[in-house]
Image 1 (cartoon, chains in turn purple, yellow):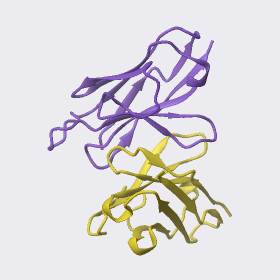
Image 2 (cartoon, chains in turn cyan, green; image 1 turned 30 degrees about the vertical axis):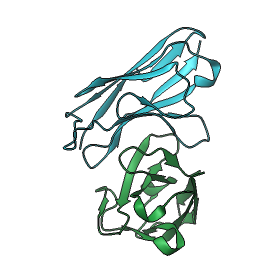
Image 3 (spheres, one colour; image 1 turned 90 degrees about the vertical axis):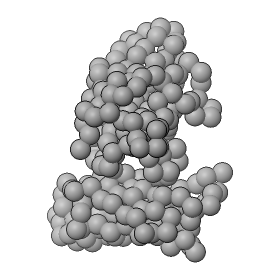
Length: 112
Length: 116
């Protein structure tokens, strides 16, 4: 199985400051159709995960533009340009290229 | 709008069975792969299974292969997960989600607790 490794696992942030989460895969995530199925999700306690970014850098409808995704191959990053209070929770990267699709361990974002 | 509503969770003894359902609306259900994903209490997310729109393509995680069966009824816009030989480690919230490789739509989840 493809292992997704996130860092850091805990991220205390100051409101208004930027934040960055790294996600590395044990294999290239480029699929045979040319797409890279790397997604980012945000989950608040007691809620279902919400997709923020799909195929590395495509922001979902309704997701604030302070969120951005980048990367290629095996190395990916989620960036928040200015953290707001509503951004707390756990962030997961997920690969949909190789079955068994897999998630990272999660990064818990909290306000300092 | 797209809506996915899971049901069927509950408390079951080890070795028991349970059938989860996911009612879908707001999209052309038969055209989409559907998936089940679970999350143990306080833990991360784990893929369980997927099924194609025609049911011709299915796959399972090794952790549930041979014990769980995914199915769908396109006439009823419903997805199912038959869970047999349940183990304590199957305790989790079970989500249905779509589309398969980049799930943008999730249900609210249904809690399955396996305990004696």
